[in-house]
Image (cartoon, rainbow over the protein chains, first blue to last red):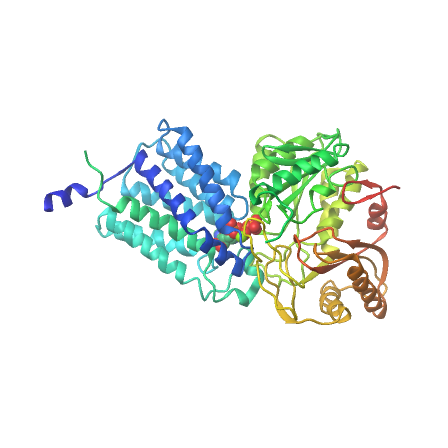
Length: 226
Length: 333
Ligand SMILES: Nc1ncnc2c1ncn2[C@@H]1O[C@H](COP(=O)(O)OP(=O)(O)OP(=O)(O)O)[C@@H](O)[C@H]1O
Ligand SMILES: [Mg+2]
């Protein structure tokens, strides 16, 4: 038992792992399309689930067609470009930029260490903030992503295994997502509501939590061997 | 959901096919990605005007493509901003060497996608300026938020800037003019019913039979307050007073009054609203010298209306009167 536990310690991510994460995110978006749309109907225009699903199904077609020739950076950039050109709305440029910047941060790599993953996430989030100008507390996807990033970095710095760090990252994103409920939106469509935006969970923070949850679930399970 | 559609996911494409078939004399429609371009684009030496936004607001924007108004429109999915590749294609298609003006409604998605498109166009050495329309007084304006939405003034800006571009005025001037229209236009809307996004299949929000929503956006975003239904005269007060006080419009001003239908409200009711609006403005010494009444910036089948006032001067009046030939707005000199 101890031996197999040892064997399951994940030290790096390959092209395949990243692809599995992207697929898992697509599956999560599919499964939660209704919820994302409901949340957006309460504070926005009711299209976030539909937008993200349209984008992720296009992404899955694209990455299947691209095959395995690409390095991980190129793979992430393909995801970003596809989202930019298919999602529209705020989600398109924001999620597109997230993946594009992640891809730039790991350009040319065929393998990602836990620190590479943290650096990619950090670069992606910086891109989202440069594009959307949102700060923590504005009731946006940033409110899930930043706690997720910070928990990941803190856990890795504290010597946690990659699996544990990913789990803590996803949990922190989940907490950040729930913490958007009482906030008054200062960015995006929800801000038009003023005080009436309080009391609702932000749809973008919800999909961002799914993104980090998909990473924890995909890469947290024991590594497939032989 | 009761709609005249085939499949929800095909609505926008099939609408565009219909537009292409109906208005081949005015526009050509490109399908991958979706762009509606003036039939004779690019017009050499003329500033190109591009706008775009989610579908579901017809005739805006595709119905405003043609001589005297837009050179291209980028239709997104229903109520969803179009994407940068659409805007880049549109920009390239209408660039006649004098640069391209992007007229952008102030929604986070539209603004960010147009920004990405302008960056891409810059990379291809096309001069692009963007003007963001933010005229909806229902939204509190603040530096720290997304700011006011772009609504009715967009239609007026597209018409007026289209006329200026047709006269051969340079990009910087057309952009300044667009900012001037935005600075002098104010709007506010209301809804009697919700609308149904085809892909969602059910109403975006619920309104009781005896309720209305004041300050509604054009995408079914809830407004600022919900209240008991009131007579048209009171609704006009609820909309027009905040508009008048915001600019402010003052005694002696001449205005263009635009009473817009949200898609599900008949003209008979829009004229009732217009009548009450003339009385209210009369009482404040404001003179309506031009008007536009009808469904021009709609929200699918939503019942309701919006009011836009634009303070006019001789220049704006002359450009408003200039000929226009589009599917949605058309008059001769
Ligand atoms: N400036 C911003 N920065 C970061 N995230 C943002 C910003 N504005 C909006 N968001 C996120 O985007 C989410 C909404 O995404 P969605 O896909 O529904 O776009 P949208 O606002 O409906 O776009 P569109 O305006 O074209 O319809 C929000 O829940 C919020 O998390
Ligand atoms: Mg939305």
